[in-house]
Length: 130
Image (cartoon, rainbow, N blue to C red; front, side, top):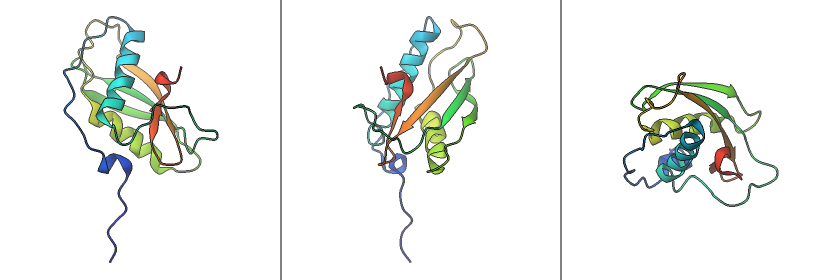
């Protein structure tokens, strides 16, 4: 029997992340969170131009606890194709946690991230696509 296919996140070489910083505002937090997602998944992300068309674009709303751990992830948009990318995005969010103390930010402690997946099932957080 053949071995099951491995997803890019499952095969990624994870390096220890530095301690998360407490953001002073939501713009700073979103940038730090997107960078943390990329740092936590160097083999399953890309930083170049976004390909046209994209394979999939799952959209997640992530709610955090005061310490920056993930409290809840809600899928706001499932892609029509490559449906597995939704779970890849959820797993990436979980693995990049914690995101730092949320106590300096107003509640609710949640943000929306759009994941731009290319044909290789590598993602780029939309926050970093400027």
